[in-house]
Image (cartoon, rainbow, N blue to C red; front, side, top):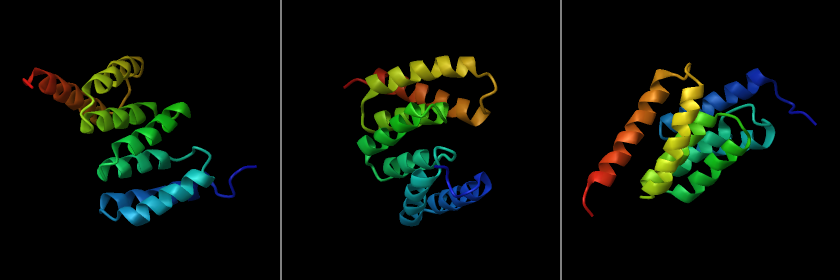
Length: 137
């Protein structure tokens, strides 16, 4: 059974959740994203939003779960890999972060039209991992 909401309605609801998130109103953003996940059939990046919320709250394992779920759905692959990398970096798991970055490099190579902001974020994580590895323990 399909969603009772049109793509336009879902996009509008998602944007409201995104704005709440960007303004730091995490509780309403989380309610919106959770609701969308139930009804949107993967048509919005709501699960990415949930991953970012968990990341922001320091719940790195939960964030990773949401980002992996997005990857399994085969949508928003680049963003999900960046989120997963961020969760690993934040948790101090640089080995897994570097593994994701290696995968992401191949993905970006296959998608030359990827937004410049995404490529800059990728480069920032590569630099961060290199810097962390270069620092003596």
